Picture 1 (cartoon, rainbow, N blue to C red):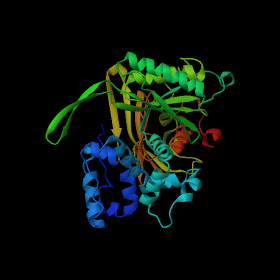
Picture 2 (tube, rainbow, N blue to C red):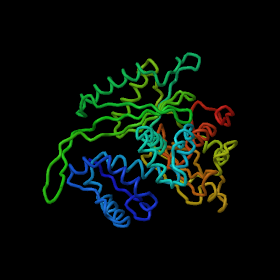
Picture 3 (cartoon, rainbow, N blue to C red):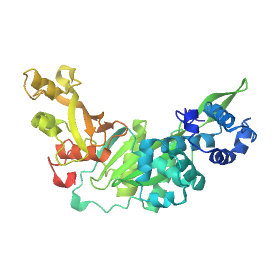
Picture 4 (cartoon, rainbow, N blue to C red):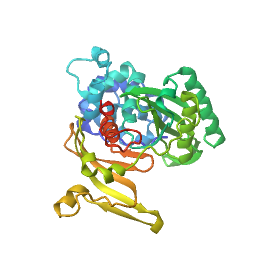
Length: 396
């Protein structure tokens, strides 16, 4: 059962960008499922304007639509948005994908044609786009010296099968259903993203249709993401609960690196460069994708006195200190630097995007950030423990 709310497709101005034959072919694929939900397609004798109005009315109530329709509509809406479509065009197989498209097609028509031709392939492109938009990761690294680390085969099929079995067993023991785990591997920007789909804790939910209320009993599906970076030999996890994050860190270590304690370093970040290097560590030396960085908020904890200080300025803390004649480094000499929020401007945008580092191992980024640029800067500036300041290898 989906809580989908479409933003663009129900608008007539957007639907008018798609030819009627393409819309008819798309909805014909779901005619049986629609009829099963008591829904009917517009009659063929309707005018084009009347046809579009009835389609728009259908899309305004996604809870009434079959799940398969909602899944497809989510792919079509997101992949036809300008930013997502740019990434689709940049994909290595774009030349193959567009080879059969009709001339003078709109973005929406091109995406719909791709879906009609090979929906699984377009869905994988959609999944890859969603993966790089995640906002919060918990990190863990290895403390094994580089010369002793085993080779990594990130897509080893047997390892993925064994990993799936282990995760399934844990989910079954923890009230999340049995034999529901699926793992998909996506190589993206030098890292390996693992999309893990599994059942969540059992739930009951009311469903209303034509003044009749029924109760659905089901395990909702959840998507978690694990990323392994071969370059840094670290793991980062996007999952809802602490127990699930710990599960992924140990099980990926066991099945892909040969040791459940391989990613045992749970404190890979430090904010001390703010104290020792001041504003210099905010300069993106040699990272073309980054234009500027400023420190917007800093939290300093004093455990002995049982209190904390949070400093913030929309102008930037270093900029504020310099303008009013204070010490050019606004970071105190004592206390534990616990959290920092930066604002970053990327070369591809005039906007500033927030990025948060929370000690010891949380990194939060805004949607649409250039994640590889952030990773390079974090290592270059020394916020990533084990990476030297201004490392040319990391920047490259």
